[in-house]
Image (cartoon, rainbow, N blue to C red; front, top):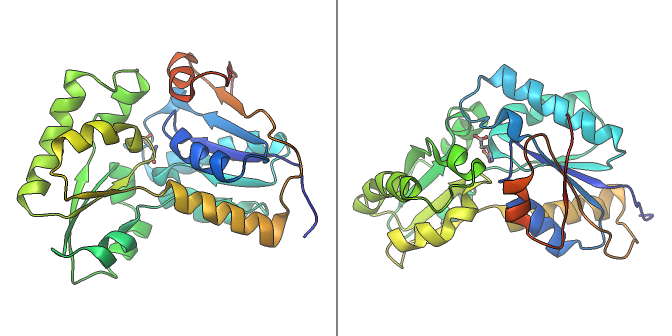
Length: 259
Ligand code: DGL
């Protein structure tokens, strides 16, 4: 496979997909990445499927205009509701992110696992068809109402966040889960707080590393890897850049754009 120095495009409804960007960037530091935070339209999780598809098309076209060679849909809600439509419309490869149910079910000893995700993900056909494969394990589904807006507004460590997490996780602990699947790319930023609530034997799983490995595989096999040397990642947001800038930290720079 020849090298290909076009950028990788990554989008999410907001700042959360940077948890995926970070895994991709760590594994593939020589790839030029362009990250779009569609925070103006966050949260996607409560929107109807047609709106999630329309927003995903808008983000994809912006990234394609920037000459991206592959697109990572760094949002479970957009993946489970829109990736099939995106793949029908565009020839560029798409890597999606879905809740990591399979590893949790495979390793669970109590045969009870919990999943925290958006309403849009838990209601999607793709999620239902995944869950239907695992009849022998009890899967406790919980919508993370309110979590994404708090993260987007910079209130990640607020007392409101602690109260919401306690209310969502306490029933799962009582039901004897031994795995908690984080089914939203915003939630890995809550892991330090979640760990304070969960007993130590409960494992937390997210999908960032798996997405990064799949991205690497598709680049190697189909698209071509970059031979640039550690290019500067690009971050665009369509709201005030403050929260995204805080999350990614220096030395990276966020620019405001209208998309
Ligand atoms: N980060 C997104 C996800 O992975 C969506 C959160 C939202 O906008 O509701 O589902």
